[in-house]
Length: 483
Image (cartoon, rainbow, N blue to C red; front, side, top):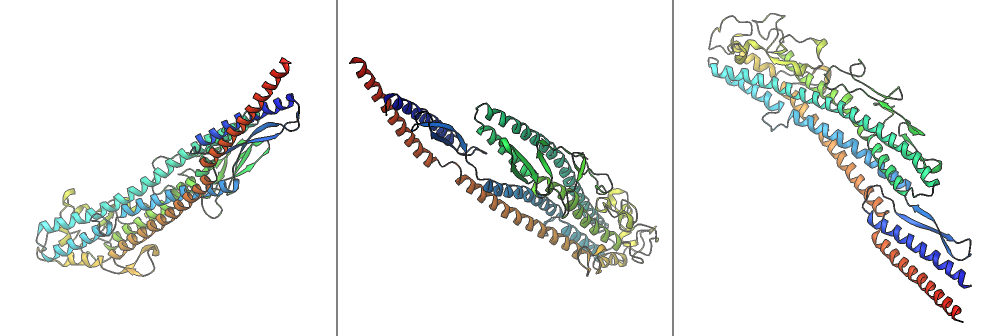
């Protein structure tokens, strides 16, 4: 080896060592940076000297299978978190059995107030208390129904916000796909752009689980699990119209709620053939179009059972066949064609409500009575109390096919909502554990600062050795020049 070759090799070694130190320091500095993948320096033999070193580029290390598995857990956690939040909210609206404001407690208080009033039917105070207990029961169903409606409206608004975010993120990924090849062809480092693209893909994946397909020139394509082409050269565009304030009767089927479209074509968001499966966006559609609708139906069924009990023929001899009972549909008799949203319209008959200009003595004398009648007669009060304890089929067999008392209907509702909330929370806990485990595995496969520091020590030794070669060559040149 002559001195020029040795000098060239040493210069190449110093360049590689300097570049390697920069790569290692970048790894250490970004060890906790989201989306960052470990880099390493790619070296090869120098074509000039034949035994020197040449820096080819920087390699970005990433396990696509591991990343895909972690993204699957991210999407699952996003979905289960949203579903669990709704189920917990509905369970709180219905209330636990030991809560004084729960439906079961309100019904028990109303039932007890009728018994108390029947024991002393001439007491105006007890009659007023029974009327107010009935109004509190109706109000509690109104509040629960309004809570479900708000939850449904919130889900509709979140869908609108998520669709806007999805469109922007897909467009940003499309732009990065175009920039990365241009920068690579100009000799620039594309690692930072790839990190940024990975973060954006993770954001899309949280909304809609994606499959990432590598393409030529370091570009990628994105597909949903349901087969939607989210990005293939050009980003797809989703469309959704936010309704704002929903009503119980509004559905996608009757055109009063917006569905999801992609590039002008409708997208299936529910059922076994859904084109978006998992993720936060699918969860919000499930809440708006399935869970909230089912919750409203449960509340409406309780309200219907309550109204129909007090419209039982012969229960109140003073009331005409067309008159509303003790509980009404916003002042009217129950109409089987108007079940949807009934819980929101449920009200105590104003003729017995002392706070609405009515007379509570009609609980004793009958809703259609013109005079208070015999103040010591508790027959009607006992009949009202007995009808609550009459076992009868639940409309639609929603809580089973057996006959249930009014208290058993509300207990079935509380039991069902509590069980649903518990199951949703368990699924969320499982999804959280799986996501944390996959994130930990991915982190372990990422930057190991101990190994990076060891590499840095090796690079320092290589730098020192190459610097020593250059010093020796310099000394030899000076010796030759003095000869």
